[in-house]
Image (cartoon, rainbow, N blue to C red):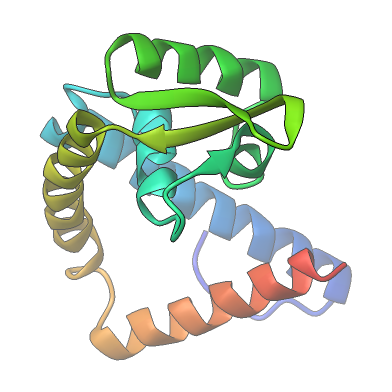
Length: 153
């Protein structure tokens, strides 16, 4: 679908969402097929990346779930697999016997950095030929604005 004027606000919102979603799917498929994700799947990397950005180093499982696109049960199983591979550590939350805290191990942090460097190169190779720096800045501004609005509802 090419850019065009859409008269109805309902149709415009629907077509905008569809375009955003389809662009994300196309980019993600290319990135997943790239060499960066041979050692670790995209969902597993997402968990490592999210943990790497956590200032305290620890996240509760339910907090981690707020940042990834997985159901709670799928995330729990994925974290168990990452723990078996020595990439994350799980511990009971000190103030809640049922809660679980998760952090990266040294091996997990190193693998995240290694994959992250390659992943960023792949992103640049896809995005830079398609969008100018100014267009990238505008897309960043618009997606942040949309995300902030959705989060506040």
